[in-house]
Image (cartoon, rainbow, N blue to C red; front, top):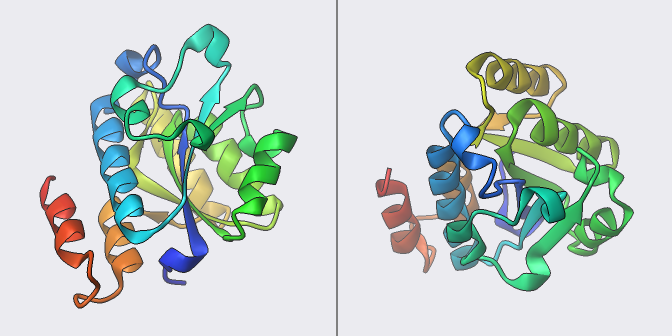
Length: 182
């Protein structure tokens, strides 16, 4: 299955400012997620960003939050976004089955959100270069479990090229510039 932009939305899971210093590869998850947001904007792919217990943990990291629109932020207390009735309704309202997921932590909220969305009828994929956990073993186990459960584990470059699909696309040069930022 190719990731078609017309069928996709981007879901950034819990990349909150107070959490990121504790994350292994947290800076990379933020940087790559930011590139994916900019690619999504260029290609007309909707963006949603979850915030887990923001009243206690704080909001999305400020650099990512600057790329977000207020209506794109989804509050949650469950580890899985799919267990939040309001957020799940908003994701269903997008009318797009393919959820491209980034975020933290790979073995907790990313894992549970991807599996929950799959159970809810979505087709989740997880961008491995845009997720993070505190410990490498947790991140590795989370990504392996997702793959074993039939959730494709991809890279941001795969996402951007598949969303663009054609070198003749009007946004191709912009997407290529984002890819080259690595």
